[in-house]
Image (cartoon, rainbow, N blue to C red; front, side, top):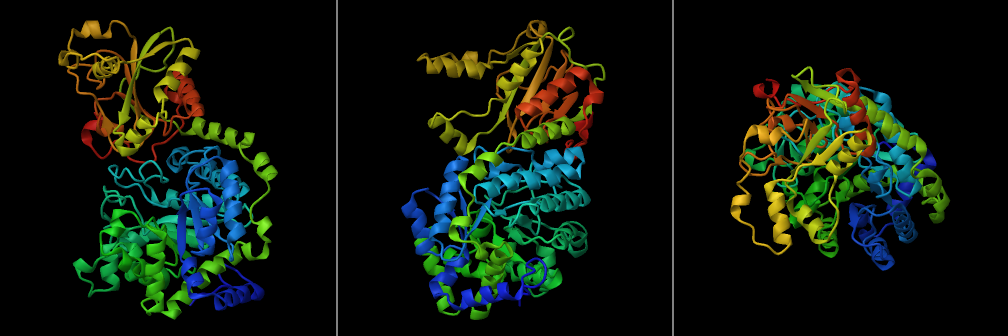
Length: 588
């Protein structure tokens, strides 16, 4: 069922024997524990000890923390693990996906804008060198989705764009980079492919509606490319692939259609049998509604394994989920054959990574390795280089606006547009945690170059301040934005509308005639900049000059200001998605 001597394992006879002997010596509880990938909720040694000794975890991921704390946590996990544990991280954009003080390199979308595969290779190499230095051994990356739908906020600013050929080449380059790190593995995501649906699998069903021919030529081609490059694992997404599932099983009824993680047609029929993937499969997070809305959780756990997934990502309640999976194994819902197949892939991967050959104290590097690896100057230089080659002048209708120089536009107003904060934004506010200050950073960069830049204060902002000071402001303040156009523009030479929208759509104020929405693009020079989601033209189609920077890092804004001052020819990035969002009026 599993060829441990073939791609991606390439094991020798003695390694195969270790896998077989280890499985043969396991208790039922130890076998079931290997199927679980858990998200740690605490760095307390007692908690970590229980995860390893009571639940026998096969894999682990953790919440963000500084490198020193994560390294010590990883050391504790391996200390109490009977079988070495896979420790994964989300290094899809840099080492900051492994620890909070890791080096951010660039998102896949930002790298796609450069058109340079070498930067994707560097991302895979550098991000995972930092990850390995703190004891991680697997990346939940690269993201192999294709950003076809501009309304898909789940991956539009994370994937390598909307061209399948580029996605394949850059994903493979990332994988090659990661493979320069000894013993490091990758789990590409999210099979069978996100990017077509406008919905978010965290909240609702997610559907890829391509037929066999279309899927094979796009998403299928991407994954085939990665298989040829030795991809060790796949993260299966909670994504329905209805036309392909029906092609494999014509008797499948619509009400029986499942997300890939619960679909034997997709995980076994397509991935294993048609595509011949021999590696390990882990589900995406099991709390996502696209998985949980199909049946009872106690039924869902074993079905994911029986469908063809080898590992189940995250307990809901450890005791409850473990008991449900154990019961399913002991009553035959999960067969001995299927259990052995899954364990063979899991332990085969661990052997491929060389974990079985290391003493416990060798599984996590010593602190000095971390200290000399994290934040290397070459990593920071790569971040700066990518910034210089990625910023994209998407739309340029007023051909005389650039260059932006102090002698032309001394006084610049920055209008800071955010997305809807949602529950996490509210929690951060309650806890006093700082939110992104992209506008403040841009203001500083402009002032450093001799501009007189200031940040727009909306009527709503003024109302909030008065309430904070204990006053009860008149509602008229909120609607008092209307005044003569000449009065509005007289104190500035240019407006920069900075869209710091990391997810979803921009949230504008409702003041009548205020400055939040750039209604005044023919009254004064306006530059609209997207530093998060690249799709702001859908909501600000009147923009005459529109730029995507893809993030708000300091190096990015250094490059942005330099490009603005030099002129349109300085922008090197090429739009990696349709930033016009398929709408005719965004091009006017």
